[in-house]
View 1: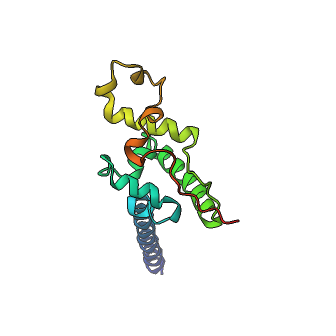
View 2: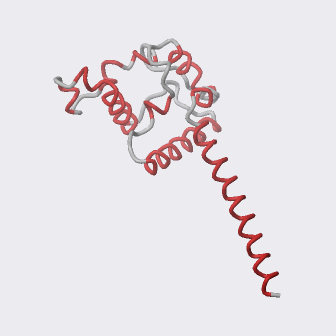
Length: 155
């Protein structure tokens, strides 16, 4: 009788582990896909931003390589979830501003990622100290001149 109870508990544990692995795999795959240019460009508000990126010298980099903080995985997941929820909210309500701008936090992240790749180029300038913003002068390198017209405001 005790043997049957252990066998049942073991079966339940195995099923639980399998379900947990499936959920973990789906979550990891979804997280990865949500950082691809194909996913980012699937929103109407990102069409012009994506088109400009495709013509840039940085087209080999995924959106998250510039727009996600270069920090520990917990911070990256938290930031990506918060920004993704904000983007989903505006996309669903179709209320993006007429010209899409980076938040102050977004500007710091993008500039930090510029420095991560280009530090040897700027290490003897004010840019290396972090006191200046790369995108203040070089925004057009990836997303073209001026502000991206990605808004979809419907009034």
